[in-house]
Image (cartoon, protein in one colour):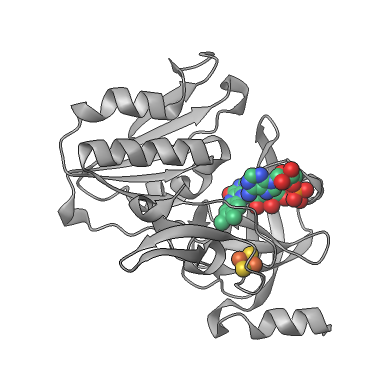
Length: 268
Ligand SMILES: Cc1cc2nc3c(=O)[nH]c(=O)nc-3n(C[C@H](O)[C@H](O)[C@H](O)COP(=O)(O)OP(=O)(O)OC[C@H]3O[C@@H](n4cnc5c(N)ncnc54)[C@H](O)[C@@H]3O)c2cc1C
Ligand code: FES
């Protein structure tokens, strides 16, 4: 084992060691967007929506991807957008290829069914990925569920499986509501009965506006941050965000303390 692998191994909790995983499926499902199903060679520990996996692809640093769904004890899926050299490489891998992964990592979303009349999921672009997994986990809860999904245009649309209230927005109006997903949220949210819990993931501007809306209507909100990461495990301090703690402004690491945070505590 190389020195860098030893360092990585030692800094992961016991239940989150490296695993080899076989690619079961790797399919283009929308513009530059792929769905990949991975089958770890040994059991993959239980996970929560909002948690992520690190994939070791090109170079020494891994790349983080949200778990977008689980199938049984082992298999899980990710959704990814091709934006640079690792995701380009990932998109070229064939069924049967083997990659190194670590996970599940980070803290996931929290929900207490009895406390809310409804759950509102708000995803922008590939930010829908962790919310697909959450949507799946919420399928048997009695509270109302709404999935707001926003994309630049219709070629980018990916929709969650299963039935439910899916509200679609595209910035160019080529499908669904014309505008951003948070514009749509702002128009619709007053129609839903309170109290609501909002879960959001996507670009910073979307998250900031979702938090503003949550504050205005006094709803709880959790956000999953997708800050650029390097080590992905608390060693490099490269994923720092400002956080409003009881004692005042502090820093938090997205990879270890997040990626899910109380949206009202993040300082944008
Ligand atoms: C917790 C977490 C979960 C994530 N989940 C997903 C997911 O489910 N699906 C998915 O497609 N992506 C997800 N991402 C983002 C994903 O990790 C990056 O897209 C990936 O690392 C890009 O690697 P690359 O080598 O292809 O691009 P690079 O060559 O590293 O980057 C290409 C360009 O994109 C920019 N960039 C890289 N990463 C990000 C980022 N996170 N946000 C904004 N700009 C970025 C770079 O600055 C550069 O300009 C997640 C990130 C985090 C932190
Ligand atoms: S990515 Fe290195 S500390 Fe978070």
